[in-house]
Image 1 (cartoon, rainbow, N blue to C red):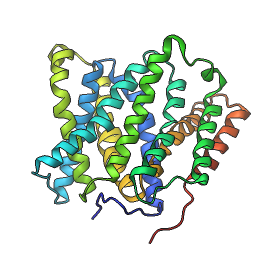
Image 2 (image 1 turned 90 degrees about the vertical axis):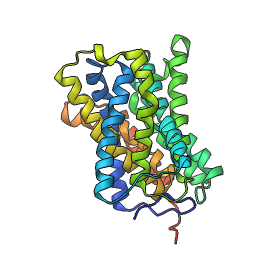
Image 3 (image 1 turned 180 degrees about the horizontal axis):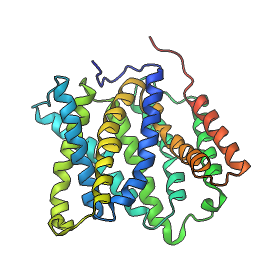
Length: 303
């Protein structure tokens, strides 16, 4: 049975790369689903709905597999902290920031997360020491994202948009803290901790939703409901379980490379599915991203 346990790391297996691909796809699609959901719901309500739907899905799976939520108060405080760092704070910061900066800027800033994660993991997670190869790989990955999103984005930093840019940076730090803290949890089934964190986040956010958004006054359309449901099931419920599973097995540094894969997938989808124009420099950026990932994930197999 999968367990979150500090101090043990597996070498990434094919299933872990498949999970990483799933997270990249559905966390990438989440930006579109959020935009559709916002047509009918205010921001806090969107976040709350995705947490509630995700919690219901995971609770049903957990009970089906015979799992139970812990009764100890200490675990529920941990669940609250996990939800604050992994859901409530970064979701809110990024949603607010993208009303003021471009998605390209947000994507580039989010690509700084692997750097934060590796630095934190070096000090707080066993077998995640900082190496020259890992630093080089992460630096190459970030450089590849910068090339992929384009030089225009690099000229837009600072000025009136500085506060929104700092909000995204704070969100990346929050995600990094959540990844490292997850690896340091006492032993527990990853499905249980996923379910508990979503339930805790739903409860914590509910008073704010009722006070600020007044959801009983809303009249959302079917598209907003479907987008919120998809966010909850695929981008929150299943994705949260996979997040904890990947971090518990392979460590936070492996999971952090998702912020390189998301812009790469978005670029490939636009070029292949939508016929968007692709510059030669973007293909170079894509190759640099993959080379950086390969370098950062090269390590000795642990026994």
